[in-house]
Amino acid sequence: MRGITKRFPGVVALDKVDFKLRAGEVHVLLGENGAGKSTLVKILSGAYRPDEGEILRGGVPVEIDSAEDAQKLGISTIYQEFNLIPELSVAENILLGRQPRRFGIVDRRRMLQRAQEVLDEMRVKVDPRALVSELGVAQRQMVEIAKALSLESEILILDEPTAVLSGQEIERLFEIIRAFRDEGVGIIYISHHLEEVAGIGDRVTVLRDGRVAGHLPADASREEMVRLMVGREIENQYPRRRSAAGEVLLEVRNLSRAGVLRDISFQVRAGEVVGVAGLVGAGRTELARAIFGADPVDSGEILVGERKMEPGDIREARRKGIGFIPEDRQGQGLVPRLSVLENLGLAALSRSVRLGMIRRGELRRKAREMVEGLNIRTPGLEQEVRYLSGGNQQKVVIGKWLLADSKVLILDEPTRGVDVGAKVEIYELINRLTDEGAAVLMISSDLPEVLGMSDRILVMSQGRITGELPAREATQERVMELATPESEVVVE
Image (cartoon, rainbow, N blue to C red; front, side, top):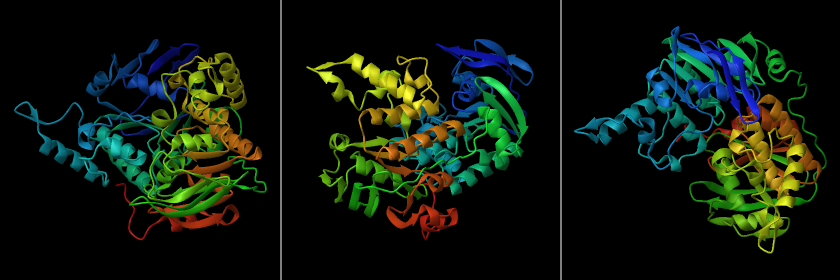
């Protein structure tokens, strides 16, 4: 890619970027949210057209105007935000557009067989007949990877592929990537997990503000990578300010749901961050959704303050001051085609209504204060939120619930797909929330994040809490010991 430039309204996303990929290498692409990484690979995969520059494949200039053009050139992409059709089966998604046919009709037996072969190669236990809508986020990620691998491409682009995977799934993914690299496939690997770079990469290109900030070997120090990414040193990666906990704001008593949650009980106090750790499938997200009323429960009680809440009622949860930042921000936390202003106002709309009319001036004033207070980088309040970087989208989701005056915040993977600089901003925001007396329940697959930002840690396994650890006593080894069930954990 030579001299690639791409402009959006009010933003130069890429400014004369050069990028080269060799056969049989893993080329890691680093940068903060908004640095231009996703825009660069979307140009390579046919989702965007560059305003300037050229792309060469094997030294020959090519035009990539669509995903079909990219596939013909042997380019496959696994996006950070899933590109699956929920209403279709796993097998149909893996082989979409390439279903085997017999006498002009889709041969379902061969389609299921081929999909099963790909899943078996990845050692992933997902039923190829299951609807994608029935799968969790980690399972969907594995289906995305299986879809790309089934194309047998010569260029593979992976945008944050490990964001929702546990250690076991990550190591299996790395084995697959190494096998493809050894077969001569060129791989572009985007990640905010800097500890992964040396383990999987061969060399590194860093983008900053839409330009190439520099090139590094994959074994470069974390400090060098961060300096090129953000243009400054970040001394404290997990800046948790701990203070004395106050009154109980959230209490869960004996919460159960058949096959999902088993007799869950805990408390979260004002000014406290309680982390929830566990492997994929442990029931962490299901617990968060049950507390917020998005999923039903069979038994148990949820209390906000000292007031009992009716389970399964999102409106009541919102009225009682619970805010929920889901792990799938695009699918569940935002309306991508609405503006920053409209997304920020979604949870607090009733507060800005008088005589059946929305007081847009008041809503705009509050939204502008939130954008400034959270340092949301946007050309303006009318900007469609889908055009913001991942970190800024996440701040919009959090800001939505702050405008609703939420006193209990449930954060499910709050820094998924967020760069190192934006992570620290979100951590400081968590500090601000607890300083103001909010209670935070934080679910994360990033163990260092859980250890660094929690006051107490609940560990889940197979739908139940297997232990509680104060932050000063918690270690990765101790958490993993409590998180690992007796049988081997697989994605299923």
